[in-house]
Image (cartoon, rainbow over all chains, first blue to last red; front, top):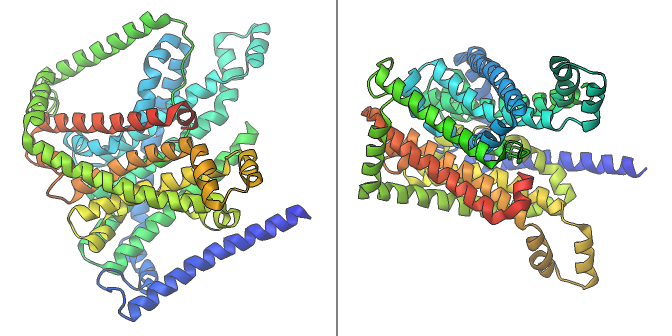
Length: 256
Length: 267
């Protein structure tokens, strides 16, 4: 009974939140139509919504989406291979881990994206620049979470492996890796988020391909409604992406 | 840009197997190896001239940058922008965080929007900020504000929910007013989450502000970096990036230290 009441109140809250958003949008539309807000700065929300299909067709959103997806894919491929291998290496050599783990943690909070002019000089205004920034931004969480997952393997599981006289490879493949997988997936999800944020951001900054460039193009043409619609589209895509990765992570965790 | 999702990444102390001396030796060896590789790459001629300048050239450029009074003018502007962004975004974040953390209904109604909007790349809002606030420092402050608002709200709201209910009940039994409860119980109990939120917020405010400066500006450290890039003065650009990273990581570490071990565990 109490659970049912709690679910009903939760749905009421979600509906209330959505209703407030819709009401706020209507108030902005009304203020714009009355001239209380400047239409040269804020377009009509109805215009923004009508611009969405136009953006999808004119800007070839599918192509832009594919470019960003491809950049993310290449960056994540590198992040997965290099990040997991480095995590294993640091787990295997304790002194190396003690010497470098704080450096990796510092790199996770370092503003890597601010060095994008440097990447432009080294790799040129190409996809490689974007992929490399995504790769470097996504690497630290994967290394740290792989390390955390391996180091957090329950002692009893390792002891069982030893009592069965497993070799180093068997111990890794049968005991350590399966135990570490849930944490490794958390790292991969975080890495993917870091990767996507930086990739879209750099696309926008250097005006090169993908979803980030769509916004730039519209802003440079002073297509007000189009700019807002493009930003809305990118936000929507990012949010959907985060929801999907979160669901995948939740789905995978009980399986492993 | 990325710090919102920077949860759970704090380094944990590794078991001291090799001893402190081994650790120091490995660190020195890694740094020495990097220096040698860098110098070899610089002298090899494999890269375009100055793409990998010698460390001496970078060091000289660093001294020149730090000795130039004009740099401090630009640094001052950037620091003011970041400070204003943190003050505005932090205040808004605290207020909204308290409201969401204190009400289950409001949290269920709005927090999921903030949770999913938090990790989106904020720099894409820059065209809107330019339209609203112009091309001057105000649009950079707005970018920083937008960037730091989300981690602070989420950290404060989550911290508020984790306050020990016993403390609240004690306050009630003493008939503490709403204001007294906020000042005497909520604020002290939330020191770590607030400072942790501010630490995350500061990191992304610096990134948001500086990225906006690199995109469109005529003042600030971001502008100086783009100026060095446009004239291909690579040693100066490396020097500027070193200063920038040192400041960003230093500010992060300083706030982390203020927050103490509890906040370090949370991060």
